[in-house]
Image 1 (cartoon, one colour):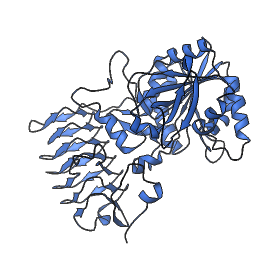
Image 2 (tube, one colour):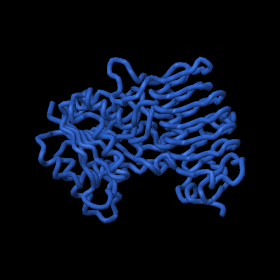
Image 3 (cartoon, helix red, strand yellow):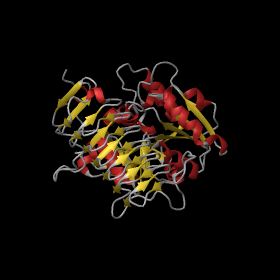
Image 4 (tube, one colour):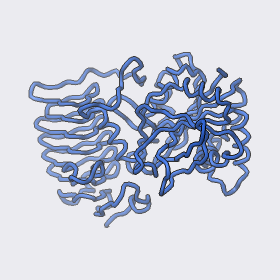
Length: 427
């Protein structure tokens, strides 16, 4: 098999992730109480024996670079590079690779494996690489089946004989296929360089693999698909992020974090969780350094979470160093890092019977919730809102709270345009 270099796209802004990605790129999101999302792609590379790795950073690049330098790849025998835009920001995923062609040209490699750094899955890339070389394709696209009602969130493909791709449509409103692109591509390096150079001089191009490069190669180059049948989750929305976490604590977990190839991550020098005799933890993942004095069920707790006496946490994701005060209840929430919730609060209300995963309340990083506060279901509190932003003790369901005030709005779907969801306020 020809030598392969992996490029991991880790600079996404994650606009659909709403307030969770205002303080970090999407690959830097905490996951499962112990990991960052990018750990899954990095671990796949390590176990697949790929020795040349480059991580392309952009949005909040210092956040990502700091984490990657602590990850330990430099001591693993891998060639590890962090690549940033030459100036400003990348114009798209294809432009990110185009700007780094000089790096690729220095390497003695035949194949370029392009990976998204924001998906949850375990995959042996060797099998896909072998399939690519045997088929003698110019590019092989990793695909997986998704529910047809979710297919509009992805690029979708239609296949002919021998897994040849006949059609590729990025985020169609009415997809005709449920075979979704995983954001994993194996390119012949020379073909990749040529197609990127052609795209770079097109002023109207979005300079994106899904919208420009791959559709443009159909009928010109041999484009194949490799179907992956294991667990795979794109965490493109808070609802998908919540669902992927809940997949770990459901009655029959859909994804095994450990096994013979456990997910690799940064090591933390923290003690085991401290669970008092009066506390109870049911069907949950609790990270190191947590202190539990209350009740936790069907939840994910990252390192350093404190759940005070008689407090309750239900069906929620709590990121690191969150404090849940005395006799407070957190129900069906995503609570970002460093949030402090006072005593006798009720945050969330759980899901309505017909909501699926839509009724999730999200508190952004560093929020301080005053004691005796009630926040309804499917509400958003923007990062670093403190007691001055809470004008009253009741935040109704379907509201957004910032320092400037509150707006109440019922979202009809999870992909409301950004200009409608963010920055709206009442003085």
